[in-house]
Amino acid sequence: PIRGANATLFDVPALANQINAADFDSIIVIGGLGAAMFNNDLVVLNLLRDASQKRKIIGATSSGVLVLGNAGILRGVKVACPVELSTSVTQTGAVYSTAPIEENLRIITCAGPQVARNFATALADAILGR
Image (cartoon, rainbow, N blue to C red):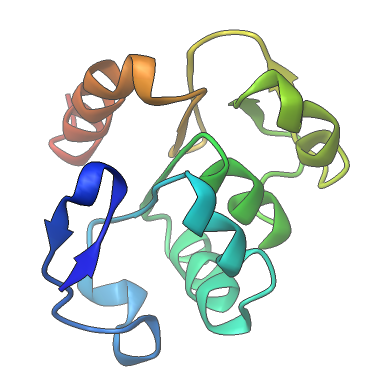
């Protein structure tokens, strides 16, 4: 298990280099301090690129949005992210939005944990085709 925010433990059944995007309906990058470790992780970035090419639903919260940008899958895509990341995210080709959540081209992004419930609902709706 890995320890997340608020000492929450999460079971990790597989590492990024052990999974294939084709086996999943969606891939989500959760933001926070730990997300920065994926900004230059070629395994994660290639997994996101593959998921995008396979038209999978891709989501990201907060600083996780920058990981999507670094994967090169946000060019021309309107995204929600924290204002302090807006310059970095737009440098990846994304279009910054002040909205708390954005849904574009099967990519769903949110600005932070204050809208986590709405983000989860948007992901579920997209996965279920609603």
